[in-house]
Length: 246
Image (cartoon, rainbow, N blue to C red; front, side, top):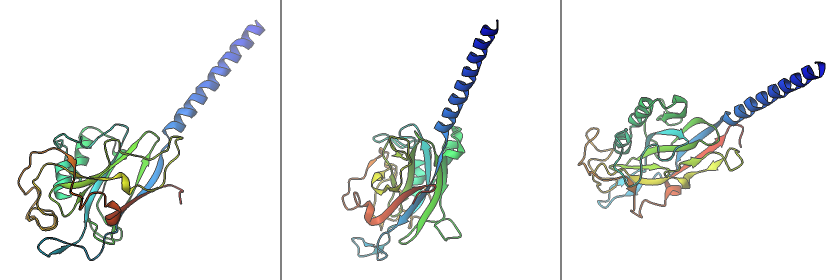
């Protein structure tokens, strides 16, 4: 009997240890890392010149971010813009619709948010040359980072990563750090017909009200105009720094 009791006790002790190990392992797996995201407008203060000789600055609107383990949570390339607020973001620089749609789907409020106030400013607004946004996100390995901002001088162009988002952890589960600017693309939401950049009357800085301009009834696609694509690092810089990172 003593031997049987000893064996039973050993089994129970082992089971308890394995349970604690499993719980501890699971806890480690879901631990999140805080990242600081900084979006800087590094374009020339002199701006750019339109065909009519008018100068205009490069600007980025307030935007939103979302962390997800699924691909393409905000839009799908080659498909019409979802009725999820993307049109508001792309045409008016207003991220509230996208965030509201995520809330309606009961997406965790800890995994999405808005950034709309330039560093040092007292009120929300776009970032012009020399300005920046800064915000924090908390992500666990397996989550990917998505973000959207309007190209302010357009009708419905916006910057965002591709369908797979941006990995915040490497293959070993370690947080990444540094410049992620080249992982953003310039997209056309396909919701409003384009006018010449910087002078169109229905573009953000000049339109008389929100949701103006002729409907395009198109699909979301990458902008092909070489005057604007592939030039991210001339216009803006996006960096991420994990908590405790250099």
